[in-house]
Image 1 (cartoon, rainbow, N blue to C red):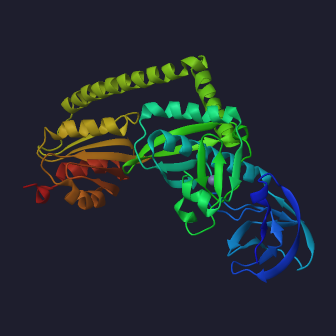
Image 2 (cartoon, rainbow, N blue to C red):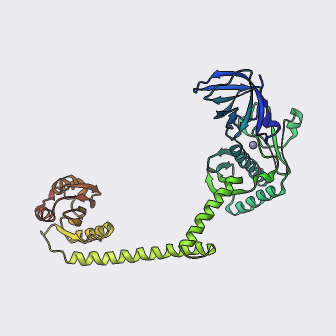
Length: 396
Ligand SMILES: [Zn+2]
């Protein structure tokens, strides 16, 4: 038996009164409740089902079964009783703002390029809309402007069920998942006509703002990330607050913040190049000072302040002078050591287990460099490397 769909008559009905027709155990646990009429949208056209309450019980979702709309709850109602229904209006209105904004953008894109909306997902954070062709980056701003012009024009958004004859001559965008159903046409006056079952705003002005926050290639088409309405306002407020915090941290005006970040990035890259040059010089100096322990292996204990990237430079630089390995340690007997061992001749990847077990260490890497930690004393480390015989791992 058909449930009267109040949301189709008027998408702005938040509260209603209805009679409970049937209550059954739900396959998902709890109960399914059938009413004679409802303002709960059961989901469809990319829009989630409504939540809300019937009297004081919470309805976590409504769903369609044939022509009936059921309401799921973990509390029970009695058949025959009259209940007051109330939908979660904040969630519903936000969905209507976003979904209606999607119609406007899809209509504008269809009119301009002939592209179809071939994928639509209303996520928690933003909508993902896929179009069947490439939208040039330069056009995004133009489209966004046109969409927001449509919002400012505050034109009516209406829904109707045209007869077959009217449908046959009507130019409208059609969503595949509605095929075979009675076609409901949603019109944004002067912009779009589209087959859709969901509730939308009544006037475009209710959408408030339409913002495209991302564009991506998707197959041979384009994917847009879009936010509308209060969600867009909150998103823009958050980004604005972050931007303001960035500006404050640079003690500059918001208008200057972008340039400040770019300058910082350039300075950072220059500093990195400087550190790298100094690191190479230091590696050269430390390597020159190495007192050979054997003809083959070198071992070096560097200041704790030295970073591992620099220790690695020293090890690699030193390895070039020895036929064995160059082992560099950073740390102390008490706290343990971080190590980098490099070699141009010994396959360290293969030798790592033997070395780790000898120095009470953990670590690994590639055949030319291994890194890790160990806890042997400095004296014992020196002793090990003075006699370590790793020729078994000589490379080709
Ligand atoms: Zn729709």
